[in-house]
Image (tube, rainbow, N blue to C red; front, top):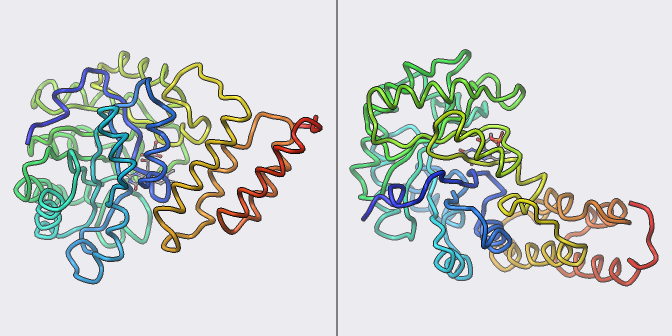
Length: 335
Ligand SMILES: Cc1cc2nc3c(=O)[nH]c(=O)nc-3n(C[C@H](O)[C@H](O)[C@H](O)COP(=O)(O)O)c2cc1C
């Protein structure tokens, strides 16, 4: 298996892993509405190695990893790469998960989550807590590499309470991962303070000095593709990762593109359809509400439409609300 990261022209632009957001439905949608502009790599939601290594648990988590046929079609058509993100604490489970991913699934790479700051997860020593146990973190990276021949990357933060970029990057780089994405915030900072891009820049210098083969990507507060390019240039990065920026604008990977009302509504309906086809009753329909706020904005009547969409419980109700809105739309003047 080739290291696909090496074959993408820089700067490499990705959409971040986000739980309850970057499922197969939303990923397909983003690929479709971003095409033909700039999006190179997508990630799954983070998925537990404990779950993947447990006979019953695997059934519960595997839907985070299955790729719908239509997403696969769009990935192939646009040559967009898809990386599976995993988390946990036991190197042996990372080894077994990596083997499973390589043998049974259809991903281009594996990413290890060493960044999530959520209390119930870090209290068990997983994700960003691994910054405090660098020897275990390195064992985990090496075990994942041993388990498959897919390129292994790490997504992490700059420290626990304070930035410890230099020591932490040096530890990680010893394992020679294909790529590291550094989110310029500490575990303690959660998402409450602005990301510190100077720390991201430091990671590049450390890489340049010691381990030139690992690609370094920056993450934190990017709100447009132009900003991603600018940060990449300013800090000499190999690329950048966009996360919450997509909530402000799902068309973020097509700069300057302004979808009209009809396209916004069609996108809302397409997302609902893709979500419902894939998850059926296995994921709470209310997860879609976050997206309805995004699609239904910036046109007359958007606020009332949003309120009606917040009450919907299933695809048919969403369709009825949108069709009703379309019929009334020519008469609506308030935004
Ligand atoms: C709703 C949500 C879910 C997230 N889930 C994940 C995840 O599964 N794995 C991960 O590595 N990071 C996750 N993150 C963190 C983002 O990938 C990203 O690092 C963070 O939001 C900072 O980037 P931003 O400032 O551009 O949003 C999540 C963030 C959000 C907002």
